[in-house]
Image 1 (cartoon, rainbow, N blue to C red):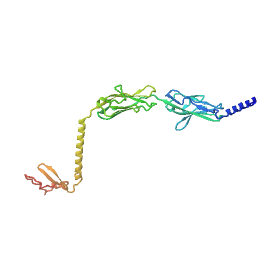
Image 2 (tube, one colour):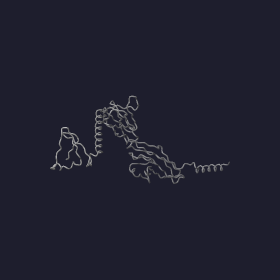
Image 3 (cartoon, rainbow, N blue to C red):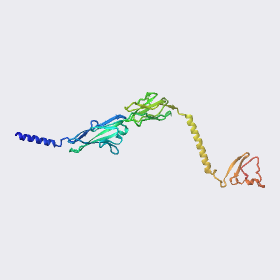
Image 4 (spheres, rainbow, N blue to C red):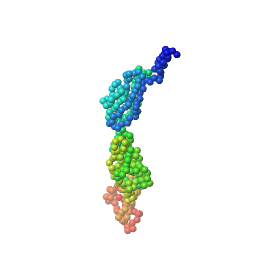
Amino acid sequence: MRMGQLEICIFSAFLILLHSPNTVPVTVSSNKARVEVPEDADAELSCLFKTEKETNPRIEWKKKGKDVSFVYYNGEFTGDFTGRAKIEGATVTLYKVTQKDTGEYRCEVSAPEDRVKLGETNVTLKVLVPPHTPLCEIPSSAVTGSTVELRCKDKQSVPPAIYTWYKDNTKLSVTRWPNITYTLDTHTGTLLFDTISRADAGQYRCAASNGVGAPKSCEGKHMKIDDVNISAIIAVVVVVFIILVCSLGVYYAYRQGYFKKGHNGRSFWIPQCHGIAHISSQNLHRADDINNTNYEPPQYTEDFSHTKSFML
């Protein structure tokens, strides 16, 4: 092969290589796809790119959520990021991040001169929040033999807090030993006594920790354990029984018609000093008969029997 032909072949191979699909077009990547920083710290969202021909690519940053919103557009930061972020190349730094900044961000690079005109990469930002003072629910007293639950919760810490319970400033064990009367869930913050005893009385407090900042503890509270008051229970049962008997008596009297107006000629007995007089209920309201001149009081004998009655 002559020298001229060799040069032509090399040049043709170069042209083929230049226009080959393996030629690298615009590429976008990140050297850290997941970023975790404490609250109020600065967060760097990395975005690296290479173009095939484009010398002035367009760079945009967006935040994903219910709706996609712009972070960096048309050469400037927008919305909540105005004045609290900077960009170098395509890498963005957010200053003093808060929990609102947590989310997924997308870096987009447009290269109109390249065969592949758009490249993108995603970066997830997680803002860590140290523990806050947990809310503790500790009863002031309980009765022996009952089930008692103590609760502890910190809703603001990120990642979620792990909870530790203390009794009289001594850490309670999570391991179930034969002599332990409780169960402790470090993830929910629940301390449960299935059958509480007098030995469980004491001062309780709970601490929340998540590895971000110092642990926080609620104020300790004393829980008193009382024995069951048998005398009080018996007294209550007696009172309830008496009320029940009285209620049944009243119901029976009502069913017999004693509480109805006018007894339709029905009669009842009223005790008197010398015996029992049989009075007709139809004449109870005829008091004017007492003043009648023809009225004769009943005559009593020594052996009073129910053979006579008097009318009022």
